Image (cartoon, rainbow, N blue to C red; front, side):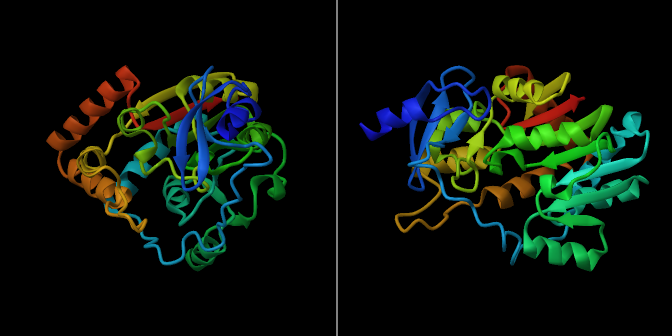
Length: 301
């Protein structure tokens, strides 16, 4: 009965629809699929809302160095921003260890970031990056200030994503680019594994968007030209979970590290032109079939 009540009370963060299908429980939180746009989200009913995730020490103990293949990939991404260079300002929202800032500076952008994690801020200070400690709204940047704004693996963490996207649209100049990535609610891993997929992880990840839901949300937030592709998959996690039933043991300890195996796979596929060709071919197929696990967003104001 409680889940039936939550179906009526919870509202989709992408399209604001109140009709939802109960998908299960994860980490004690009720999870739903929006019946309209298929976005996946944790209950946001006031009586059952997930507690705010504490990002104070989010990067504590992490290896903040950027693997060589990842640095090369970020450099390739930043190079695609060149047509949008006008006032030369680039902002990375949730800049973490500063990998995107480093790529921006390498390509002669006036790159700065925004970060809420104190442990991340300490590292950014040590590297000499320009950034604001706090939320994007607290930074109070001027209207139409940036050519390019990026948000890599950020949207799935934000309780009120429309407010963040509207703020991004406000400070992005007309014709400017918003580039972002976020997990896909209808990718192959979500379809095969359901709530057993490790990316479905409230209260850290509180929603995973569908392509339809995210496009609606971006347009509602002030973006006019929106392109979304679906890429990436970690076959090792799919195999592990289908064989073992989950990625944790009976004590709740992880038996599979999605991030580490994902990095290893990407590093391997970046070693040579032939392997890169295989990777690009798989990503093209995943994008064509809309089955990639990651949404890649290019949105212009």
